[in-house]
Length: 377
Ligand SMILES: Cc1ncc(COP(=O)(O)O)c(C=O)c1O
Image 1: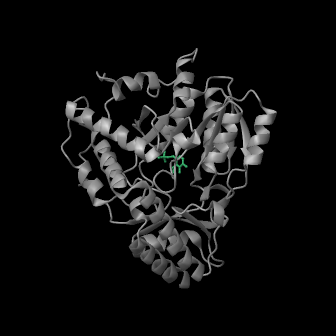
Image 2: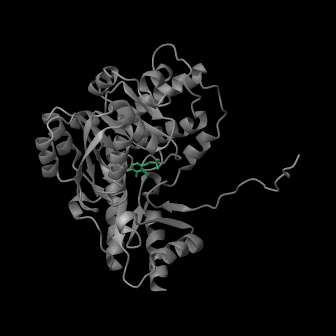
Image 3: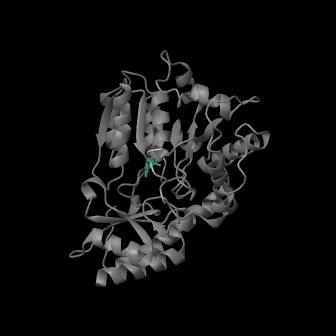
């Protein structure tokens, strides 16, 4: 053997408080669910649990959509699953871009051979419905519309009900990114008429990263069934995946991440026990607590008040403070993670997450005290 045995021992991660843009703190109940015995991914006990996960996700998404399940992969794979199944080469898609994740949606459309029509808003602004209306008027042949509900790169929340209603009036199906919104603010797929939605396990659901809940309306399923060309991704082809996630007899498609799905199940049970309305209210209350403390320290928010995400607080870094050095100190001295700015906001802002289990008064007290200490120095 030419490669020496490495002298590496078990990995022991530090215990951090996660107040960045995700992942959020994972509660002990979810961590212990992950450690339960692994069973076969076609074991009847596991299949029963998969059905419960779908039921719990329908509650979280507020939908009766049959096609609701977690994709085995991070939010980015949920995003791709929506686009790769719904968009065929040459399709025009109206895509709203007001931050990093809208840009990624447009890139998905391009790579599939679709034609993105970009509706642009400034970073930190919500999507402007008037611009969307104008884009449909100029592109009556657009059959798909995509936007990010909660833009994690800026902390802006867009008006999903109004945007989806515009798309419906123009005969288009709506794809919504709710990676950061699900569980933290209202996400009402059926009421708003959203046709395809994807989320992530690691934000307000407070599960470990790596799973992406998705949901598709009947109209979206009909569009997928009417495709003339096969979905270009074998792994994400919903027609194939469904043999595994639904029906009386489950067939092998891929080996599901068994233990991570135990974790998601537990996280969704915790959400159902708390209740969606109570969870939304807790996120709102804790945002107001954090906001009072940050403003008392002289910090101001990037996003205007009526479009602010309670679970992601983006503030301008105070003048004279080295933003990257401050984050390093928070991590080293307080075991506290907050997020940096992305793209045009890089170096200028902090993104402070209050997502899921991280949205607690104790975390807020730690964050404010630690920031105060670091800024004063
Ligand atoms: C709004 C939004 N969309 C998509 C993603 C991608 O999710 P993931 O990092 O799990 O692939 C993220 C991740 O932060 C996000 O915030």
